Amino acid sequence: MLKMALSNILSFICLIMLTLIPMFVAHNTPQNYVDAHNAVRAEVGADPVFWDEELANYAKNYLETKIETCEMVHSEGSYGENLATLDGDLTAAAAVQAWADEKKYYDHNSNTCVGGECRHYTQLVWKNSFLIGELPY
Image (cartoon, rainbow, N blue to C red; front, side):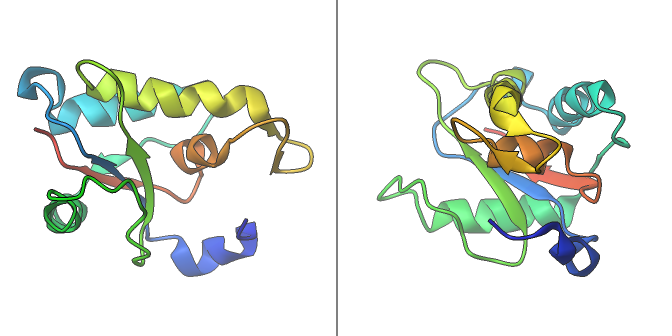
């Protein structure tokens, strides 16, 4: 896991959520993603995030390279990102909740995951994340 020391370098970078299954637009507007993120961030006192079209375009371009294979792999680009798939309709709230549910594995004192995956959660509430861009379908 990358140390938080990278936060100075990556402070302007935010998470990107890529979803690789079709979703209903009515529950996946940019504001739905912003609201879902900010609800979780408010619980831990993190500042709100804002929508960024450049990140949304990055997510769209990356997704287009995975349409044929549906691979769930990180882009290895310069942005932090969370990927999500769920059975059924993947709404903004459901994707963010899936990442937020990893909180139970996060140990704040040691800043590590204990007993399970928590890196999506830490990306979700990372204090230096302030822009998001999603590919809403």
